[in-house]
Image (tube, rainbow, N blue to C red; front, side, top):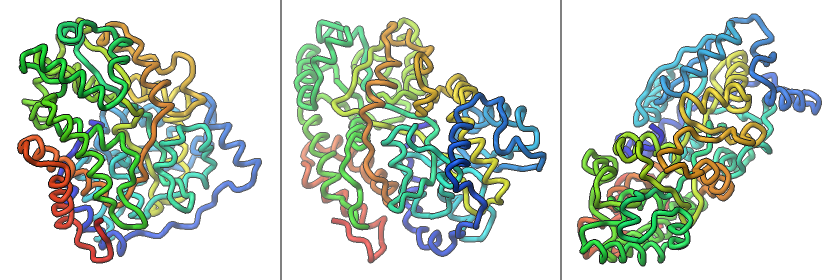
Length: 460
């Protein structure tokens, strides 16, 4: 699943960072294209049909690409099957790993000197942790044309030295979904344009949420979960989590908790924990109206939890006050792999994301939309599930309007812990109405300090 907020790995992230630093394998010297003619040829090659000759396909050398990931059957396997059909000399050995086990498994391999896989997908929310391991190849050495991809996504996988350590599989723009019947009942309209006009700022959400509360006699809430909207505020924020190696906790948490406490105090947010069976059941009830909605949430949350409402097109979609990315993963190639594995892995990754055939398979089997601007043109990103939204053109909203406005805060090595604490404190804020922003921020800093014990790091 694209979105997960799990605590299992987050306490390990920092605790094992010392092991990571000691156990990282330094990059091997590889034969990479460096002259202009070769680079242009590689870049052009990535734009061609998947059936054309590619780097790995031009040799009969047998190559095995290993892969660890949490989305093997839905995402990776269909792509691997087709690529192997086109390039029989390339064999894949994917291993399904739970999302929460990805970093611990990798850290344990580094600490013990065990073999790493050729390809590792890195969750957007933990890119800083992965970057800090320094185990990935610079994809530009293989001819990657960064100019044709979404700039915000490319920036998130580029380090301070210009090294591109991963390529995002897809763009995952996030919006706000709502139930049309309840919007009609409490706001007098279900039209997306009219709802959008009502909700241009966070203050507007409080005003409209208050109207819903009053019109329903306190029986209906704008949102179901403080954790869910704190997550929204977190991903929409461009405040960096760390500055000069120190954790920017006060600024980051203040921004989130100010908004959360204002929503809570207005009485527009219910107290369900996000992602629980009880919280998920609200998608089909008549008491909760609006939900933060990344593109993947249409299937994973709306259709899964409200099949009847989805079938009758009872949902609408609008843009949040800020365009933002929520979820997704970038694929990286480990430097410990052989030269042949690296070349084949690069060709596979760019074929999957930057060839029409690969990107089509990715779209049709997993619902992932490439952020390669040379492929994602015309109606390529037209979703097949727009009926869930009453025929509304959610494809243009997601992949043109919002995707073009995405901003992503610079990843840091502490993002896992920061996210874990955010989730915990958000629930405390919802359960304790006396908890103001200052108290919440201090509680977050105190909790973060128990997770991050490196004396060289300042939490400020």
